[in-house]
Amino acid sequence: MWKLSLLFLSALLSAQIWAAETCSRVATINYQEILVDVSSSNRGEGLRYYLEKDQIAKELLDEYQDNNRPTWKSAAMSTLGSAMLIGGLLRTNEGENETLTSRNFLLFGGATLIAVSYLISKTNHYNNEYLLSKSVEEYNKRNTPRIFLSPTEDGAGLGFGIGQEF
Image 1 (cartoon, rainbow, N blue to C red):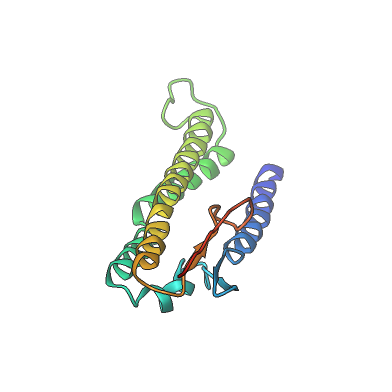
Image 2 (image 1 turned 60 degrees about the vertical axis):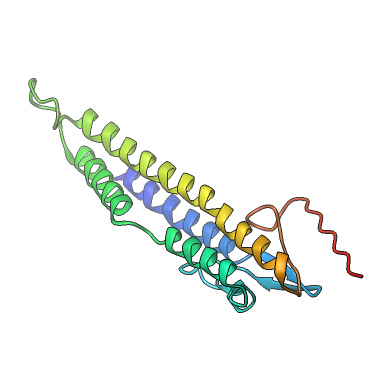
């Protein structure tokens, strides 16, 4: 029971950290900071007003948002992993010939499924960020005011933007 309550507590605390991280990403337009992610469900929506002026940039933003939606595959993997973990916690090792239903197999398999699902999701999210930066780049080629997007996702770090007009 102690392990289960610790698992739920850590999930609750990490969800609050992710929520704070999502809402803090900003872009600079005309020396004003604009929130890029106005909600956690529709990332990049804060730039839509500007990016929809350019057809290519709008299409890239739409693709970015479509790729950020959760899939049934990742939800199924996480649910199965959670069920295996809970089953492993409730299971006792009494039989000798049990391999697929043994406590250790269920615990290790459930934790592995959850970890793999998380890593796949994070990898897809990381690779998808290219589309948002490409969308801003396409907009900046043909339109003004220029959008300066921070090079890191949460706005932290060091970034340089040089703009010159004649």
